[in-house]
Image (tube, rainbow, N blue to C red; front, top):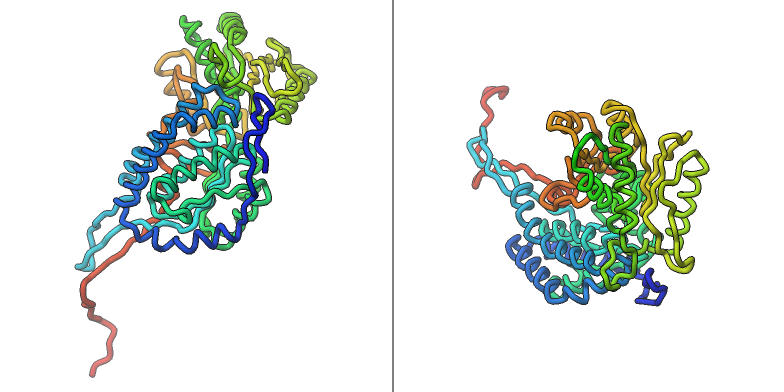
Length: 466
């Protein structure tokens, strides 16, 4: 497998495609010994991992920037998130899956403990090739699982680097492995009889395929995070510049390649002529450039030329269906996947496709009032993230109650969710197994027990005499 830098087209990395059977056998060989390690020891090894990432922070960030095309400043924040995940996961594990003593009517001890599932497959995305899979891996390891991580075929170098940091910190190679491969290796890993769980972040299409394949196997834990067609709703506010910046951050950070990015700007009539020109004016100032450019760019390229082609075609398709271009999508070099921020007024479109356009493309939809705005926000099969900009506290209270999404913000971007909170959505955005702080929930299962040091029992009724 060969990985190239999207911003330059140069070869970055090459490596051999892994063997799923060998990876599973290796994981099985250490599964029980790792599960029997005291949780304190597992946490200590995670802290050593965090320290290893700190030591490697600069080359790690540079690799993320080169392989994903995102600006260096953003790659550095991703490395920081990898480090922070350890302490957050430790706290979450203690809170969500700790041991408890329970009242018992049997005059013994009743207890609640949690067990690891066993061998966990983690399938990672390319937009946050370190942070998002790490958000599965660290909680899974703390809980006592062993992990086979298949990074996206578009960012294998980052995946390999991440796993090397785990191994360099003293975590055995069989406990966490990097399986290089494409869709076929991912499919084989998901279906393998000795894989006990699948933790996936990626497109709805791939997530649905996983869900369908494993529907007849309820023994296997499956956590799906599948993106969204996220709305940001604009009500009345005097803070036009701040609102415009919030919308820009929501729609165009990471070149729009965030599952929580705003895809639709829903604007009430009274604000349309104020906010749309402000958003356009600010979008035109955004610097789009290579990861290490000076001055630093706001956003880099999308992941590859195929993605850039599809986004360009989608922009034209939206116009052909009645969309009005407010900012055209431009591609300065047809050989590289750099795209300018683009905005389309989709109000008069005959049919708005309910899909996740994973790039810097924002659709604007004009509505008469708040009732229509909430209805339009919910006009999607997805339900990951939604934001309300402007309005009063009672407006947000209604928005929170009526908007259908797993993340609901007020006067904040749709993206940038806290790792100290659960992260997940409804509809096509997930299967009700939120990640981030709640990842502990799907990394271990509860076991209730009643216990006595000696058997003590008698049968008081229903026995024959003699």
